[in-house]
Length: 80
Image (cartoon, rainbow, N blue to C red):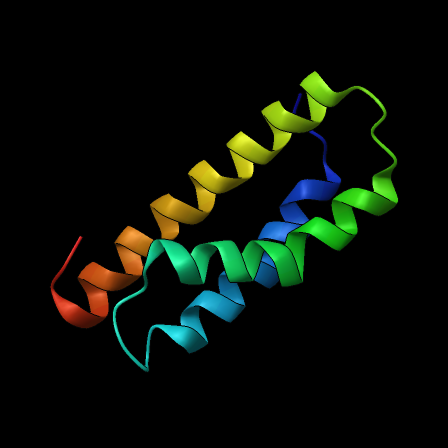
């Protein structure tokens, strides 16, 4: 399920979250937007044909983004 390329995708997305959290607490909507802008196009380029594998990878990425957003919200806004 895990692919080494994903780490680079996540790093770009984390940078976007770090900028966005300065404007206010991060929400699920913002996580989805960051995913659509920074992750989805790159996943598409990987050419994962197996829909089960792709779904697992997307779930893994959302989990990582969610963890990072909770950390950033706590750090900036005292919310988790």
